[in-house]
Image (spheres, rainbow, N blue to C red):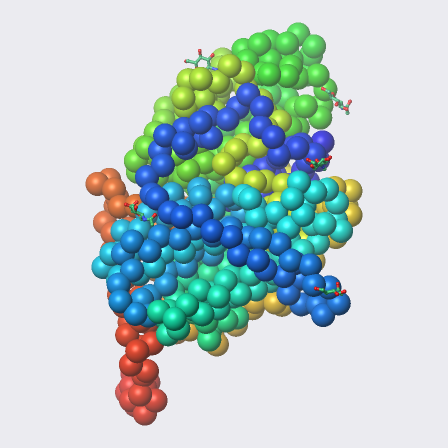
Length: 502
Ligand SMILES: *[C@@H]1O[C@H](CO)[C@@H](O)[C@H](O)[C@H]1NC(C)=O
Ligand SMILES: *[C@@H]1O[C@H](CO)[C@@H](O)[C@H](O)[C@H]1NC(C)=O
Ligand SMILES: *[C@@H]1O[C@H](CO)[C@@H](O)[C@H](O)[C@H]1NC(C)=O
Ligand SMILES: *[C@@H]1O[C@H](CO)[C@@H](O)[C@H](O)[C@H]1NC(C)=O
Ligand SMILES: *[C@@H]1O[C@H](CO)[C@@H](O)[C@H](O)[C@H]1NC(C)=O
Ligand SMILES: *[C@@H]1O[C@H](CO)[C@@H](O)[C@H](O)[C@H]1NC(C)=O
Ligand SMILES: *[C@@H]1O[C@H](CO)[C@@H](O)[C@H](O)[C@H]1NC(C)=O
């Protein structure tokens, strides 16, 4: 059982994937999203494999493995077409291909070839097959640096085709994938002309972003839906503690919530609370203006639906917990097919959470804390020592909280160029995003009505106008980068322009 040290399992599981059972990536009763995803498939592609070194940074071993990538060349035009390359994140790449409609929609206009690359250790890109997660000696090659080097090799390979020798490459990504696309442009500017980095919290690291910020945005999303809603949730923590303090109370709770495994002891209750905390974070991320199926099948503005059951914080504990169960079912039982609620399961079964747990226990340490005053959660301070000890217990590795900023830069991004950082302000991850313009070519686009990388999703009649505008800005930058690829900027003109604009 993985004992989560923080309020948000999310910290162990960036964009959603909290797991309590570190020993299993099988899912039990609760898997609505997986079932639904099959019916929802919209885009077609060819699945290919490409062999990459296990360790890009060593001369002492030459093991390799096959990573997967998806190709759609239907709209590719002429010689040296643009390559639109999605830098895959922590999950099966097919999920991200299906949820990145923006790339599919603009490919015909640009005559581009679409590539979606799968991140090592996720989906079917397993360096050691079913042994990949068996211990730290197998897991040690799961790093963002190695993944970027995989993508660099794949891009070089794609560009070795005779009709792609001079193709401009534009990278895209959302969430951790957006962090990778931004870093790809920073680290491999000779391979990549520009990056669309949507909802990429490249600043969500120690000493850069305050640990309580994420929880405050989650809370404010719930407050917008209904002012009583965060108050009810805040009260629910004590209500859970009160009710489950007796044997009879635990029985009552387990029956009324239809739990797959009845609550037995205090660690079961902690698992339940962590599960709920994760669901609130997930809901804030996918609070999209239309029904969607990214983390789970959800209605439009799912937080409004959840909060429609949480409008009265002045009830007795049991009544409050029955309301909370209805509210949670919006997320856990969207299909109405769930027979029982398994709180020990991954709260977002579409993503591979164990890999992200490992990444957050090594490079991707994103401090999270709550205080129950500025947010609707129990007070849980950030405790790095405990976090580190838990990581050691689970993976025999200790996190390096400053590694990401040392490796990629956080405070000084001034040497970066040709990156669009877009952030929805409803998205709790925006707190770790780049929210102000760095230079004329590394820009921040704020989407007041946007949730987690809404701009990368397919267009929808319910899209807020700020998202539509953001997609237009993306297109304008992509056009500019491709143009500059063919017609390099005249140095003298640039200098003059800079002087005039100062
Ligand atoms: C590319 O995608 C389009 C739209 O989904 C589809 O019609 C076409 O068959 C796909 N091409 C390939 C090669 O998969
Ligand atoms: C690398 O591969 C070659 C054969 O392909 C093998 O002879 C050699 O021992 C390998 N080196 C290492 C360090 O594994
Ligand atoms: C991996 O698969 C092989 C063969 O299918 C099996 O013998 C082995 O026990 C499996 N290992 C793990 C860790 O599941
Ligand atoms: C929990 O119980 C305590 C004391 O028994 C009570 O003061 C408190 O109001 C209860 N909490 C809720 C949310 O009802
Ligand atoms: C609580 O019960 C579970 C089984 O439901 C067991 O695995 C776990 O070890 C128990 N924990 C404590 C602290 O007693
Ligand atoms: C899920 O919804 C269906 C239909 O409303 C209901 O019969 C079932 O009991 C629910 N499952 C859980 C675990 O609450
Ligand atoms: C950054 O600059 C772009 C113009 O390139 C502008 O549209 C955008 O609003 C600016 N972002 C911020 C946060 O000021």
